[in-house]
Length: 181
Image (tube, rainbow, N blue to C red; front, side, top):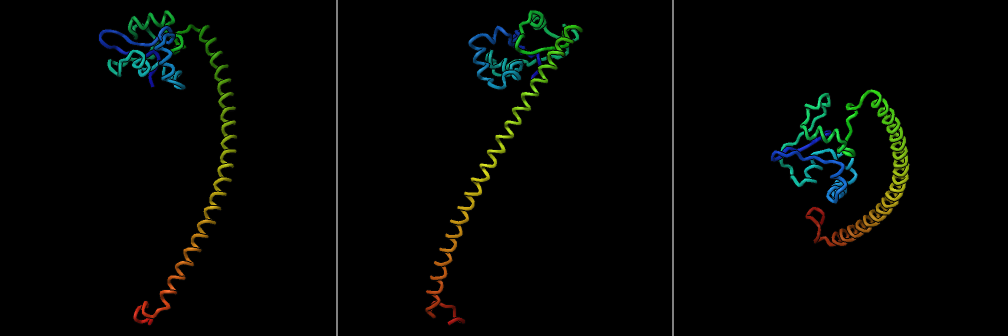
């Protein structure tokens, strides 16, 4: 899993994604390509490669050490400072104390709501799965009952045919082994 921010160095250039990139026709195609994985994968090299057509070439870079802007290329620093990465990723460690406290407050509330929705969705899934399993079991049991009935009837018919052919053949002493003639 790639970290925010990620970029690719190729031919003396840096390739990365910005909010402006996501607003383009190509950005909408990228969103469609990523589908449900969009929020997790948008910050990664796969998305960068897809959008810029890099096909995996170049040197994939990322850094999560925000302790100094010197840890990043100047172009990435400017993109971070200008807010160009809005919608791509977050770095709470860039916030001052008061702003970080506000961010954490919103984060906690959003996480609580997320967990509530996720748990409700899981409960609904579990309920539907239980109903589906019960229906499956009923169908399975009915199918197995029918299968066993048909199998038993076929076996009985098979046994009758074998009994008839055996005893019809055995009735003629010429068809018997020597000791049973």
